[in-house]
Image (tube, rainbow, N blue to C red):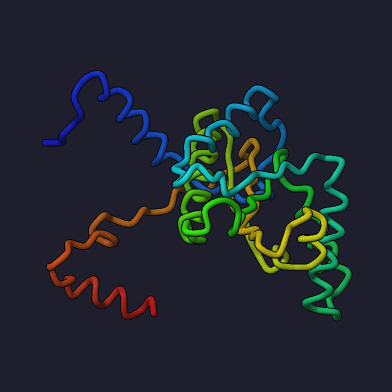
Length: 216
């Protein structure tokens, strides 16, 4: 028998469960207009503020890339490709530029490793940022939009860091894309809790040992 939380939290828990398990990654090239309107975008962005934040440092920020700045981002993507591969073909350079124009809403996540209390290390700051991003993704899902996280070597390029004004102590882990899902793939099979939950003092099962061996 499934345990449910006491009233009045049962409906809330059921909605949260459905929302969490409904969210899936939609590739940015499949995220089309219309995107969130101004009110919906504000709702999505405001969800990030509910993330855990040890010391109330706000060690992360979200940078919106408006349409007018997409060409500059495209140029930064192309320069980053050239830095990695000076022999890249025109087709490869065009593909790098095109990535800047995907999805109606594009955000860059930036994490500050130094501001505020120096005893709160980078790992805690990254966890806070990750929670903020998940809140954004879940709120986008709740409003009927698709979303995705994308990363890559370009995020560490000098041109992109310069475009976003990143300081040496700031990290850019990923972009967040939001828009209307043009197509969706079947939802992937989620791992079972037995795949990622351990009990202190209990040895892992043979299945866990086999799984961990292949993940090294």
